[in-house]
Length: 213
Image (cartoon, rainbow, N blue to C red):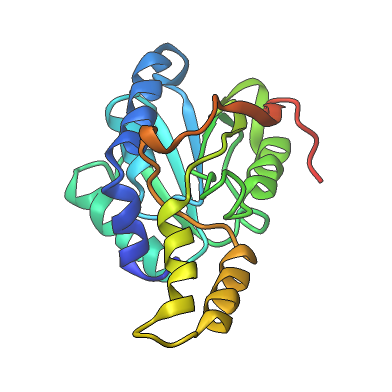
């Protein structure tokens, strides 16, 4: 639920993730400075504010569908003295009306295992409708890498039900295994748990030319 502050606080506290966006904005400042930027799914407005402050954007349109988050973004933008550069537009990008085309689209559309949040279609829609020819997409490419990992702790947890205080509760372990296998598991994986080298599992290619739909 993106109307819950905790979700966005989690994103903001992800220093490597936010740091990569900041580094990219600074690296592409020549393509952002004095130009118009669109932030799709702006949330708290962090990327919009960084584009204005660190990228030197002339104008930033921060489009956010959730009313509560759009309101918070406005507060944060004003608190940082950027309301003259960043405009929050509350609504879905598919329905939003911008006053002009943009030179840059930036978005934190990636979720766990890349496509979890299902925002990519919205970003591509924004590209087709609002990005000027030759404009910049940030990010401009995306890949999924996969590697086998050690799951010894989980194995012990499941098998532990087979002898719990002298009782055989193995059906509970089997049910838990089935439940966990039905959906992706999100966890930090230490390097020591890797059982092989990562391989490229999926490449979305260049987002400037990826077809919508």
